Image (tube, rainbow, N blue to C red; front, side):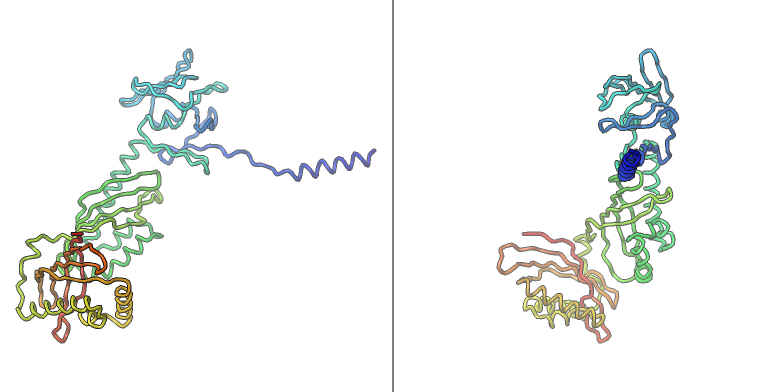
Length: 391
């Protein structure tokens, strides 16, 4: 009998040891403006998808004065131009006298009244984010949102100022050091040495603002002051920012749209340039179109500025692939050299392009930037599309 009891004890022990030991359920945490809320009267809990919390701690953390009517079971929170009332067991609440339906009614347990947290957070003008994995709720109040918006606007004004001052250290201070944007800013050093461009922040809108991430859309204008020719342009960007150590930092940027700022008057005004150079530039452009229509890679390459063997080989390969995949006819239109400084010129040209096997015809306005080689010839260095329209 003893042996049997001993065996049973061992089997029971083995069974107990074989059953996984589950840790206690992780408590729900509540943060208001990144500050954790302490609950002394009870713990928040989840009911039918709604987080309910002891009302007093949350109301006071949100800056509301609290009134509790034990006879009617009514909770009242008041603040500047705000009056919120909830009643135990009722799925109706009021905000400044306007009745609102609740997803979950307030409840009472062990002398503590619990209220739906999302309703309270949104009633006070804040945003409420529930993290089911981390079991946490983050409320960002309207005042905190306003402060974030002001900080973001200040950040972008500083970014533009630092760019115009060519202050890399200042720009780096606004970026996440582990991000793509940080690498982009670092690459601006060589650009600052070559170009003199001033930027203006025309528009800024905050597309999305969360506790630790923001999406900001901007419209920016860049104007050439000095240095090699680049056209003035207006760019639309989407920036991604993250909050690190309490500060907003730019982590990424995407160019959405770019518009060349060249008026008809600017494009049609002839530059003050020697007729010999004007003729040479127009001759290069004519040879460029002729080589394109003949799909003559050598002829096209002869009109373009050469940098190094690797770049030339890559361009040669790109042209070969383009001609093998397309059969385009180019018809040049009006053209005018509107900028000239002796060794560099900008020419505005209009052209029509048509795929020979298709009926659609496109018209483009192009800025071609030419540079003068040591032998006196002019080569195409850059090209910028002003417009591209289907006729």
